[in-house]
Length: 291
Image 1 (cartoon, rainbow, N blue to C red):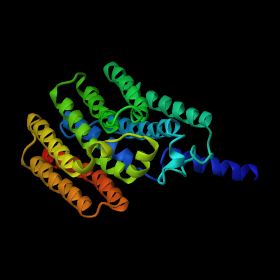
Image 2 (cartoon, rainbow, N blue to C red):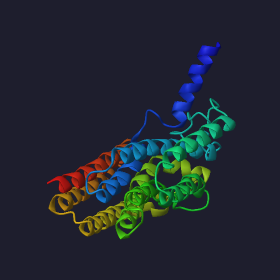
Image 3 (cartoon, rainbow, N blue to C red):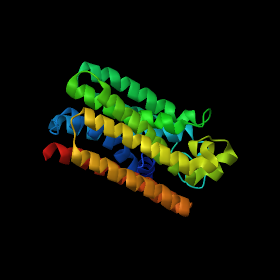
Image 4 (cartoon, helix red, strand yellow):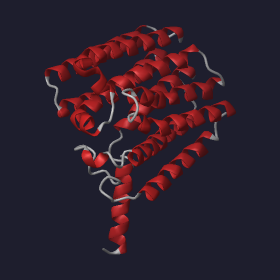
């Protein structure tokens, strides 16, 4: 193999490592961050803040994918969905993946340095959460909860960036994201449940068992209540509350569709729908503030 072909193959492997063609995960991190940023900024965030948090979200999610694959390199070859990942099939080695992980963290930290000191301190917690998450599934059935904490931390940082402090509103958004992430990642985990049971990986999908659809329903209701309270305390009104209520209906329709057709394909569609609905909630926030 010539040098050009080798370089191309490495670039493709790196792209696969950070899920470059699959940005649904980035959106799921971005939406709660932007909910918080827009509410804290009264609907008009600074362009600098928008750029930093959008780029930072991409970098941190990419870093999270890299560390996840490092942690799961011995599991992934035994799971149908993940057996072609670059560490699982040898296209990258651990040293290369670690270099990419550290490089992405460094770039994200450079962005954070343009924000206030309080936000910089909070970013260290975000790094810890992102790094710990992949290992939780070995010891607990609730890695999805830790994922929700990692994915929702951007909402806390965004609020701190604008306000210089925290109050109940970003905490409510953060908690809502924990419930939301637990719901959509439980749906995602349903795709791997048979393989996970065989290799001893834990998840909420396994923990909930035949009560999984009831659990998803309660999780989505909790998301709606927490976001509704956060919105009311923020002074948001009818448009936002209507958007949240409509989102709940859509969430419950996802659960109903999955219950009717509990296939891997339907689980993936349900996961993707969550990434879309997060954007719909942001539209409701902006529309309420504008009108």
